[in-house]
Length: 365
Image (cartoon, rainbow, N blue to C red):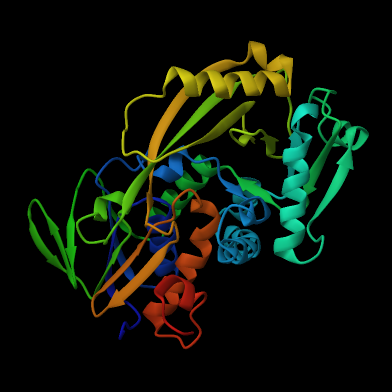
């Protein structure tokens, strides 16, 4: 791919991938136009609904090993990226790396034991996690109910304040001179972006439209996810907490301003209708068992979105002259985006070192 400095590049889709790629290209002195079918803020993308966890160990037991590898890459890449923002002192607060805590009720201790065994089998040795007792749980998270007798601390995992991050990326894109066009659905072809007003020519088009690219991306589907957002001053959590259960794994992630995001559901459906009563009851009741103080939390949002996924639930990057397509982050958006973005940038530079190339493109590195 022959893209020189100051090339004129279009990025279709202003979700997480689109914003990261546009931002990095602007930092390399390219001229970038960012198209978005909806609004820039609040974003309609799955990245806005997500919890923003960087949890490679948690995903290692339910995903391909490559998800773990790309997740470990993300833990290194996110702190580095955040230092590149104009207001680095502000954006450094967007990322926290205090680990993740996995706990289970006494009757569900077998689920916790199985997770520990699976981690040992997959990783080859206990690394990056350790078993902790009731006293240590209370030291780490004093507001969790004392009935939890043991847990696992996944020591290196982290989480992002994802909504603030999306806003910061958009501000940075504008500051660097990017042209941002919202409420503009597009179709793409090599070197072309097709809008309602006609065809625009570019040196390169990068398609990051998620489900908006279904007509081009073979076997792309939407997977429904549901999250509950609550607010309370009665609880403080320092890190994401996962609650093991035979039917689901609930996660609770602390956010700024005494907010928490709770999720567990992954539904094979492209239904965008509001959250079901069953889902809201499961999320709320599990939250209450974590700490009865959540009973007085105020429900701020019941959010639903669709994650773009291929049949193997792995992301893909395809490149041809004039067009790169990057898609399929599934429910691993913030975990896998650094690997995908780094690969896309390497494709543009025609670098011999393309991170995770065999995994994302099917080609040999």
